[in-house]
Length: 127
Image 1 (cartoon, rainbow, N blue to C red):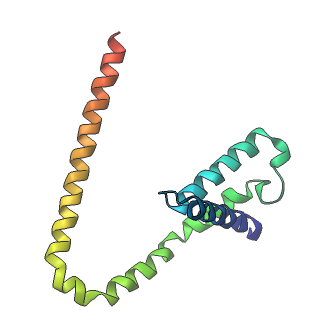
Image 2 (image 1 turned 180 degrees about the vertical axis):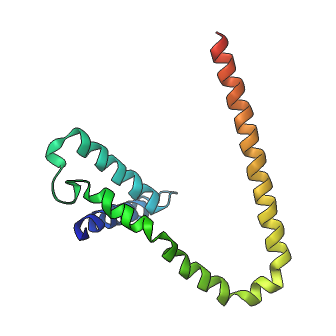
């Protein structure tokens, strides 16, 4: 379990170093997840990679354990919100308007994407 968690964190560390060194406009954890995915896919195709934490679903079991306690990761965010209650009280209306606007924009972009995709698929299906 410890080795599996170490491998997960190592993938994130390698990705963070790469993102900072190459000045990539992507979050390090996202690149780390892609790196871990590629490593797991390679393990499934190349049996000689199935050693250490990659053996016997070790990474999968460690990630399931982490997901079971995912709610603990929201505690620091909650503490941060409580520490900024005075700023939230001062700018609460603006924050609410920005949140509502971003939800509306997201819904509209999602609908537009669905419509464009549906039309493209129907055009390809009729040919």
